[in-house]
Image 1 (cartoon, rainbow, N blue to C red):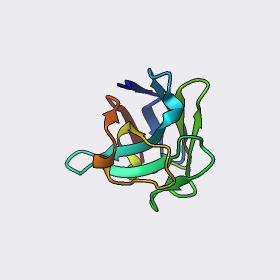
Image 2 (image 1 turned 60 degrees about the horizontal axis):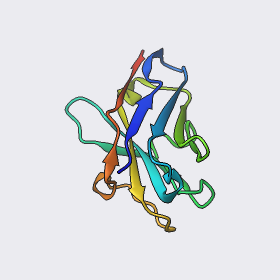
Image 3 (image 1 turned 90 degrees about the horizontal axis):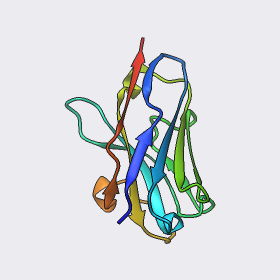
Length: 127
């Protein structure tokens, strides 16, 4: 069972940048497709981005973050990243990474498709 731990959240002004990291405990990290989700107070958890097990087959983004966020992974370090630029107040949320044991070609935006979750890291963007 893979354990995930996010880091890199914080308080930033609008227009600023942050880099989130998610470290996985599993040595077979390369067997997992990874996703980033976020949840604002009073809102449902929403899809942000996903990447396949290799990082070469697909990277997908929610329309709201496309062009501003970049997902990547380093399988040698068992880590997935989310680079966030030009942050907006509406990006404020708890950000979660999630893992799905999957080496397929399809990506998933539904949080129920991911079996493993980190504890989340808070991102707050001030206006």
